[in-house]
Image (cartoon, rainbow, N blue to C red; front, side, top):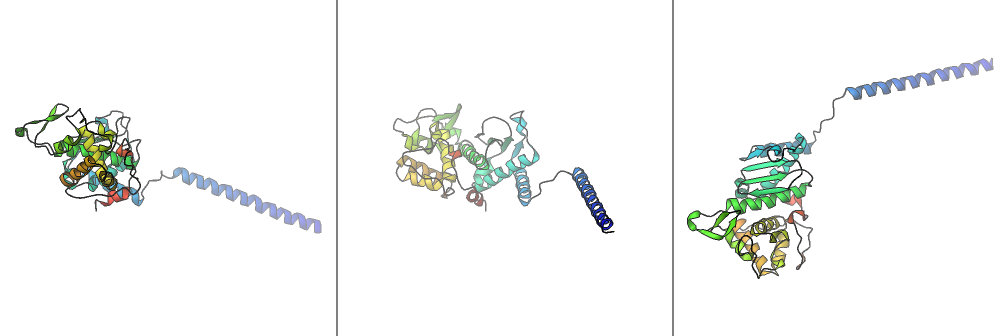
Length: 286
């Protein structure tokens, strides 16, 4: 009788184990079927919705937005990546003086291999792929320097032509940018014999007077405190700093870089690769 009792208990135990395993397997199959029927997850975080709002705000600005394929037919982007780029562009433009941002009329955002940015007159072409957010925003500031230089400040033909031309287009004698060019340049392709490496905010600024202006514009806005410190030991940089302060930025000064240490006799080559505080920049729009 004891033996029969033990076999009975073992049989009940085995029955329970088999049923539990079957239930677990059924539950797992149900779960897998539910997963298979579920639609792909849609990213709807607060950050994403904020980006969409910024992208929409850029669409509503008084400028013409062109598809990336109009510049590079290989340009490809998703709605999310395009809106992300638009949001960065909008925040950057909002951090600039209103008069500067308003002069930008034509904007192309593309996603393909190519130059990071092209700017001048009232037009900017910006590459949105293979760059960090900070780099993209800094490149945009640099290109806005070109827009301010060659578009917002142009002078009048009746004042006569200066010794400078921009791709064959005359720079007229009452163009305020001449005050800046003449600090280090004889004309659009010849640097003054007295100019030194330390007279420029970056190595790239030595390319020509227009890149000098755009790099200096970028440095003033994103690395203003460092620029001011550099200017304390260099008269030409002081003149360039004061030109930006009073002729371009209406007396406003900026401090958006808590990271970079100034070396009196050293210059980086490209200002758009120098670190800065993005949150400080974006806060300027407030």
